[in-house]
Amino acid sequence: MINPSRHSDDRSGRDPEAPPAVPGWVKLFGLVALVLVAAFVILHLTGLSPSGHS
Image (tube, rainbow, N blue to C red; front, side, top):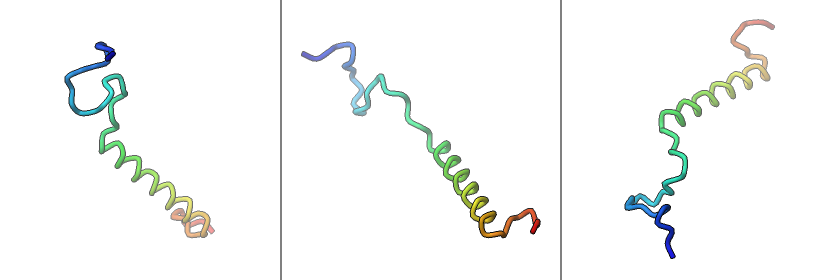
């Protein structure tokens, strides 16, 4: 038997109790932040730090 409290007329296939999806701009911001941190770490490990210190 189908549980009527969990059944809805929404045909999207998502569970109505599932948390909302992450917006695209949040994913993009996280990706850009990750790339910048990775570039910063790589520059420091290679000795090409942007601060100019030797």
